[in-house]
Length: 494
Ligand SMILES: [Zn+2]
Ligand SMILES: [Zn+2]
Image (cartoon, rainbow, N blue to C red; front, side, top):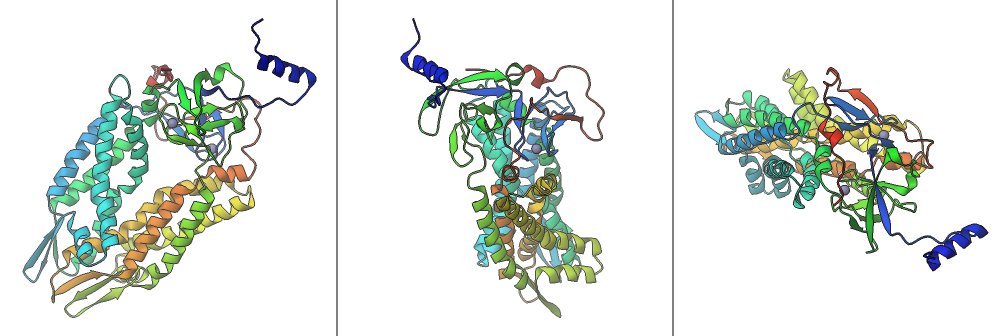
């Protein structure tokens, strides 16, 4: 008889109705065809998508996957190469030339951050340099390497790390916001002197489009499916366990409390015990990142960043952001005064843009994130779908508040004519930049799934497996015939 002593003991306990001793975990399952919604935390079946189709969460409506019609590698690669060329050309050419009473001054992309550094606003100078010069170069380089790696037969080990970092760094490349900052600075300069727009403005406007096109044609899910899943992985306590694969169509729906999805690559794993929200589970067998069921200490971190942002919000609005000196006029103004000045000069749309980006958006972020944190502490189930959508909106629009900071960095760089005309940055600008960065951190540390957990909606297993809602991409016709690449690619065991 081959039954082991422990198996016999277990059988005896079961027969006697005694509680079972928790079995030592020897393996974990990865479940194919199942995804977790990053908005609400519901696990649902992911149907095979045709090109042009999009799968949305059945509960909160968040997009889960979107299969592009374009070639999944060649199209983003073409845009990425164009971005690379445009970036290098923009770096080498002039941004704008200002002519004040016959004296000319030409600036380029790096002049703004450098002038801020020289003026003693090092934090702001470094921030502007990072998000307009360094971050775009880094994300373009990373994307190029990722697409090169994805075009090989097996995805190399370094590629998953790069893809995870790409997604973390991408929001910090703020070329598109910078373009608007240039536009606002240009309108402020036209009534001072003659302004010539340099080729760099057109080049970075084109760069903004090619970078957006790279992102919208890139299908990261397809790249992850190319990646093998390791047959052995490490749990957080150091144990090594075997990884087995099952497809959701062939098994019963596991209890959601036993399921965990990797935050980086989306791989769903099932453990033979409930997974804690507070502790790291182990290492993902597909992307090698540490897996948490929810973002670690999400409420505490978000609250801390929000409090810091509120503290900086006061000086950001009370102190002037810049001082404009010119013969026969000038003076310093705060953010709200800047918007009013544009309004009085008859530039109503621009004034509304500055008001929206610099005053309404930071306020909306602080108020809505605070509301979400309070509702979560209280376990409220009020307007959960709306709150999840609002979080998504706040997460996207937060970076646009940088317009004012960029405008000041450009004006400081270009208006340097000593006694004729001069622009200097003030303390309000640094505080305002701090508010924007802190609210960005607050949004990135908040995990909207905890709102649904707190309301008790990610509880016991539902009957059957809920299925994601498949839609055609808005404004596009339904998919053409032919199987998708995704339909033929299943995770491969090593
Ligand atoms: Zn959802
Ligand atoms: Zn992973």
